[in-house]
Image 1 (spheres, rainbow, N blue to C red):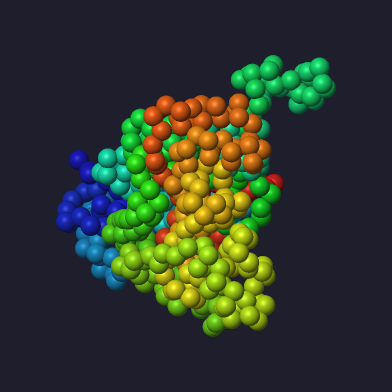
Image 2: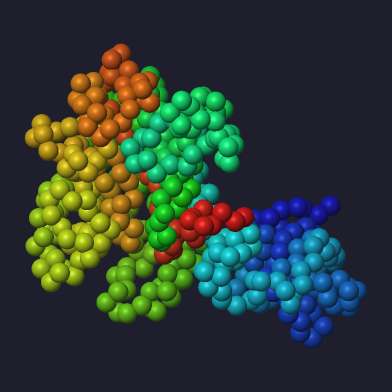
Length: 480
């Protein structure tokens, strides 16, 4: 009986001399002296397994159909490899073709393809080394998120994807409706009558699970949400998606300092988990990162390689300072003095990515946590400071990314929260349930949101967020 297993296990196997069965997709095939050398990959590892086939043992039609992109099953003897680069290989006894692939039409040829081209064939790009590595790392990080929270006493809360509330107050949401788009029912004012819609009111795809997370924290103390969120922002940038995944812990009885401790410990745990469990994929991406950096101008190159950067983040404490202190640094900086920033910096303005990256990459040269932002540039639910000008917000800034986490201590005082709700123009009836938690057993609490794709972007060293999610959703693009 042959052993059915994956390539990752076979490459580490000690079962030399055993008959094994392996299945996967052909990366390359070459023939030399009546022997065919087939590089096979099944996605379990970045490394290929070499299948050696004596051409005299196989009919010509079978080997002719073993082409790049074809899917095959090979049964044979696991032996020590005579060539360099891998410890074992398979001497094929039989080969079955599961699916042929026309070598003249298969888009993934054995050469380097641009990331732009690969986005156009997102249904095939997981078969490349780069995207196979990214997707395995993405899986490992998702698992690590659940493990971290489970091991630290958090409960996983499933927040709704369809909601009638806008957590951010931004209004840039995707509408959910079953009404006839060409002839919707109207009310007495001539407006669309959403009372006749499926849910009897206006509903949208969620921008955040935070408000529901706070409800859970007021009963279970420590909860987190991890699910898809949606922003109808017409942003065609390397940092924005219309559909992305968010991790949002909420903790009762935590203040801003506790929130910062949790965020830093959480991020370091996740990065360290990837370093420990994704070594081969990260080594490949580190080499790719260095190659990409070499193409840049010397002054634009990153000082650290990918692995060096990940290890540095894990090993060093994050710098912590207030928004006010950060603005003072930025105003005095050379780029500001020489008017090299695209956006001017003043107290009260929201910091742009260029400002955040200057603080992280040039000034402190380490991750930074900024706190106590001006009230008017932050969301309504943030705890107000006694100075009457700032709120207990925090943003975690990473090199190459800018903001990776945004969070705050939440306002638990009903009167203060209501004042902010009215100030920003939120309709009280839309979030009555949220406001009621401040009436019945309110408690200090804090939380944050981590954009999962931005985390994957940092860990993999990729330059565009569209390359760290399997099927990106962006303006004018909902293929696949």
